[in-house]
Image 1 (cartoon, rainbow, N blue to C red):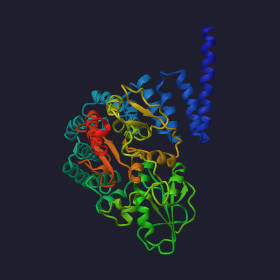
Image 2: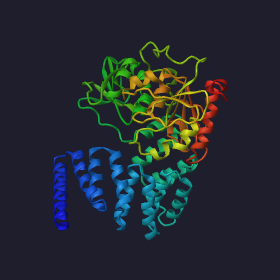
Image 3: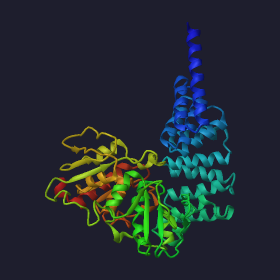
Image 4: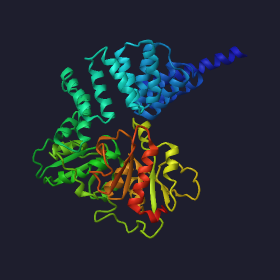
Length: 487
């Protein structure tokens, strides 16, 4: 009986594998991943099956499921062969799982203590896992072995950047440039370092080295030429937060006299941008135009230099003439404070960007507030004490999100698209930031140069969300008033 069961299981396993390979050849990548996933569930200890599942999800463009498959490989079938362990660590790091990547690279370094590439990879994982100090000690160790290794010198710059050492990061980037001139990764890191200090021409120029979207067929790539009487498409790139941040510069582009400026965006944002007065189409449906420009290239190609275009706030609204409101809570009522504690799970720095549950509870431990739960697809936590939490229905359409934001006295959020939307609408907002924030928030201070009504609550040290929450509580008192929150 046992042998017949095993034989039947092997037949089924072979069928799943055959189905997966057939789907791969037909470029039906999600279907292939599902088939390989069934095989993996039957033999969870087989590293190769996890790897096949992860690769199929990568080809399908689903980084979250790829990360899940790789984490399963780490937990259930971690390879013992050193090159395979290194490959797993690399894949984990590239998909936003630095804690598991760190453990993989530690295993490699234990067996290859003088492998500069492995030491550099471990340093990158520790930096991404919120340990820049530990990362720097590894970088120093690796530099004694291979001081001219280009990737290692870039890692040194990235770690000094994560430590807040501006001068050190620039110095290492200069060394990297001498070893490997004009490398896109180095130029992009230089852009981050420069733009941390505020928008500038050198920063925007270096930012052009990022991966940019393709120019639509038939259009010419715009670099500042006259637009009078001609049409231009603004091509969507990167995330929704970037869309809400950079779409302000479309107004500067429109002022160049184009006959039409059409903006591409995800379908979920079409109604919001249309209500705000933009000529907008869903992603992939751009009409023929004479010119095109990537969204994030606008500041550089407009020669905006230090212009933040914050004078245009609010540039996202419920209708063109204003926020559409009259719905925002009155100052005499119980303050309504929205909360977002996680961002897009596909973002590669979720481990550092998202709030931790104890910090969330601490954040919401303020009396006299009606909390409005804005975490899409997730129920609010069980309220403690007399905390009031209202959870409105969220459709996933950003116009509906904007309507809810317009009823708030304040939004508190991690670095997400919702925070950018609130900032672009001119709604009072507190953004909770990790110790090493995204470039647009700068290094210091609680004021935001991009959004006049946004305040910043920073971690005082790496992974110290409690410290950021204490800053946020102080800012709540300043924005709403201590009397209203019962402080």
